[in-house]
Image 1 (spheres, rainbow, N blue to C red):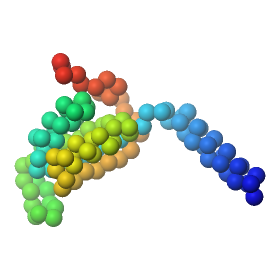
Image 2 (cartoon, rainbow, N blue to C red):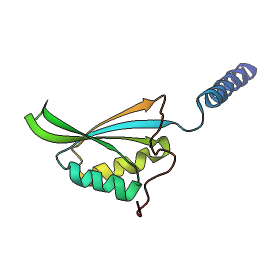
Image 3 (cartoon, rainbow, N blue to C red):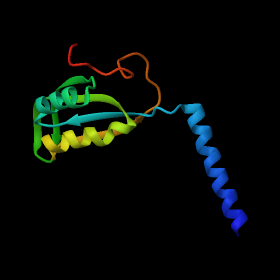
Image 4 (tube, rainbow, N blue to C red):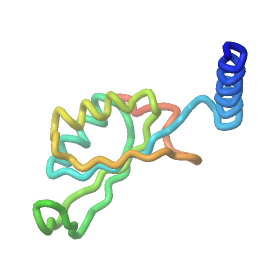
Amino acid sequence: METAMYSILAFLVAAKITDLTIEGFENFIGIMIVSKKYNQIKEGITTKLGSGMTVFIEVHGYGNQGKTQNFEVIHTIINRIEIGKINKIIDQIDSDAFVIEYDVNHIKGGILRRYLSKNK
């Protein structure tokens, strides 16, 4: 029984190491944020996290409060390590924000490896 458990453990470790070798150590997360307090969230992400973003102007949407018109949807890509930081920023500003998180498989261009500085 003990040998079988060690075999399973060795297999899982080898599989994870193989994945890290193929995929790389940096895992990125895409986040879309829908909130009525989008201006404060944009400011918080830029100043506290230093991450860039793309903002989509939405014409209208449907939700639990009915039809909403003329709002902004924030889209940003962050490192997996910073997911707690961005969730904390969003929760402090608007705990009712609608947040979608998803794995990002391939990224080309942008400023992911270097973050916005306060001078730029």
